[in-house]
Image (tube, rainbow, N blue to C red; front, side, top):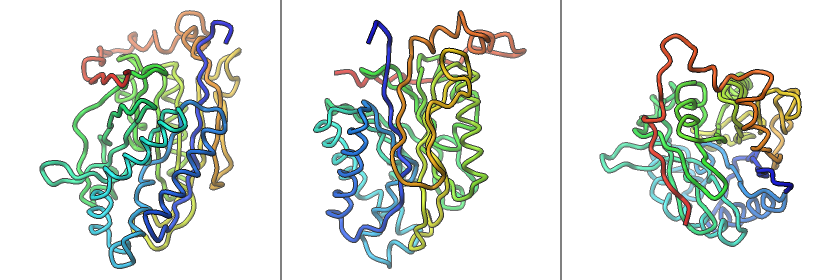
Length: 303
């Protein structure tokens, strides 16, 4: 390691399937985690709304009905989360599981992603800003912005559209996050490029790393995730000695598989005082800039 802080991260270009049973779903999830862990990554990232594919296990009557899908998948969220926690333990990796609907105590559905550690600790980040289609679905916005203290460092999660709002991610970085995970689900190429542009911009602004995991492929049986376009990527600021393009790794559009890269957090951290540019530090020079870290809840996932 030569005294450097290095982390191998793998992001999934995850194809929405149509599992007939939960046993089939578990087999797929286990296979994907095994292949992700085989890259050597210590952190695996799955996409937004990847959990929706489990609606297929309830049959066409539920899978073809949006509200029934949300209720059915929310009903097995704990079971799915527990399965990913078991996979994290058996492979010795941290996993951001695929997000999906969770029913709040007030009855509303939220879009939640769960980060689990090999030791069984877990933290949840809900999506905070709803897209137009999520408003049509009746998905409610989350209420709390969090950063997770882990054995791998402080990690933030900005679910898809949330990544397109600079102050959300800036607040995470001011609270200590040097890596922000961006699970996404976009049906058009234009949506993919919006998320990609946001991931690159957030990495540049705060001199951090961002990691995007999308859903890919078609699932005509589902009104929620019927079309999916995207490519996974791991991004940093474009700087000599780190990456001249800002791209550490990027997948081919709509091609299922894992994309992995090693992030050098020692080099990344050095940019703030010794880089070509000092975006993270100079953020405070903007008119009206104010501290944002106090808006973030820091959750420890360290045993």
